[in-house]
Length: 166
Image (cartoon, rainbow, N blue to C red; front, side):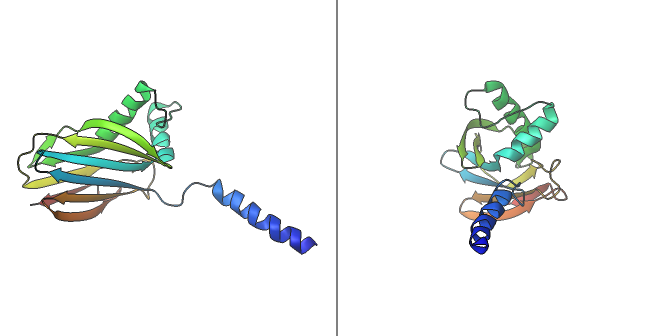
């Protein structure tokens, strides 16, 4: 009888303990696509919500929940943070990112950006330090597609930018 109780309670206890722990690694995903017909870069970022909240709370010294739908002040703090840590140079010139929208997908915040008026791409330089000041193991995976050429790379706290030639 004791073995049956232990065999039932032990998995429940282990599940409870592991479910309440922080995820084991810190990774965000960025997809950058050049839409030549629209003359724009389309950028999508997928970042763990809890990690973003911690970064913003550390920076602003107050509780922040980026998943709140109707809080324009917190959305502005999010946009400012992401814009300060993520930038793209097109043909050697820094270009402004236009924030379009955000949505929640499970435990991730998905943000949509674009850069307009790009008639031709000879080079891109992507700079990304999102969350690296908070997590030493943070990895930002970048996938870029320009004129059907796909390139992928990883940015970390030791490698914060990457230049690509086309």
